[in-house]
Image 1 (tube, rainbow, N blue to C red):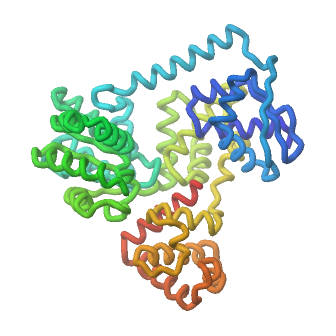
Image 2 (cartoon, rainbow, N blue to C red):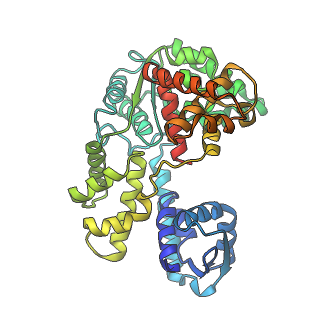
Image 3 (tube, helix red, strand yellow):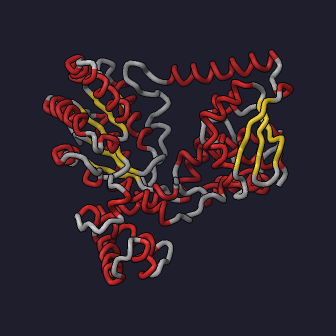
Length: 450
């Protein structure tokens, strides 16, 4: 592969992982000037871009290059002033980035935290999400009176945020007097910590006590944060007692969120719980078609189904691939067909593999159960550690085909009969226990994204 092709392939993948404004600002007018197999030098237009790539984007650059060429070991950056944009181009680029940032800011309602682009009208319904959609729509028609709290869970990128915000936007449209507030759990945590440190908890509580519809996204991030959970518990109770609608989302069931207090789990499970699973191929194709139409872009059915067949992780990935195709068509001025689509997406779609190592499995399981990796490998027989070990054993045997003695050695020389028992136990439990199934699915999803 030539250096030009290598960098073009890398840029195509990087573009899927960062915003268009950031891509245009930091990666436009960069090129590979030296490529000798394991050592690569990237030329940039000025010292500012060099410093930014080194400090902010170096990891994603080297990770992407290694995916394309495993021999890559080191990436350097050099300044080439001839790569600088003309003044007109710089101004055009600057205005483009400003316009994109302004668009993002305009899209978010400062009072509610909602983005008006999310609505029930542009949400694609299929067997994988119809229950969650029906529950959300019912709540939007009668907030506070049905399904309270409403808890939506799914893996990343399957439409949780779209549904949650659709509820808020629908209620706002019907009753402008309703006070609606959408927030990411991470932002809520930061607010609580800041209020505690500055002795402004009363101001914080007053802010939330008048809300009619409280929407919290990715509630699993409350895991392990005891003080935050305590304050959130009081907010939850006060709103609930006044029949105010509470809507939550997570990447797993309430009972599967580790280090979450039992009283919060109980509250979350007290209303309606609905899940969103992976869309089937027909629905993925329909979603892709709809998103293309939103962007006034034409995709024929062959291309839609090809992408749908080879993109099984989430809806967000579909949108990233669509953006890639739009950009390529604009650059090449050629209409898309199945042959050139395959070439454009070759390096993106071929990464959908399920290969992972013991160390990655150990890390994914320890993250899920919120347990130290060293403790999992210890001889301790604590219940939570045994549960984590059994999950590792099951994945190693089921997915990677490790022998029982090999698994025993990986886990510190444990007796292989214990390994056999653990594997059989998890295999039985997965068939009859939805909770174990959910845990296994979540860990597999996190492995595929590592």
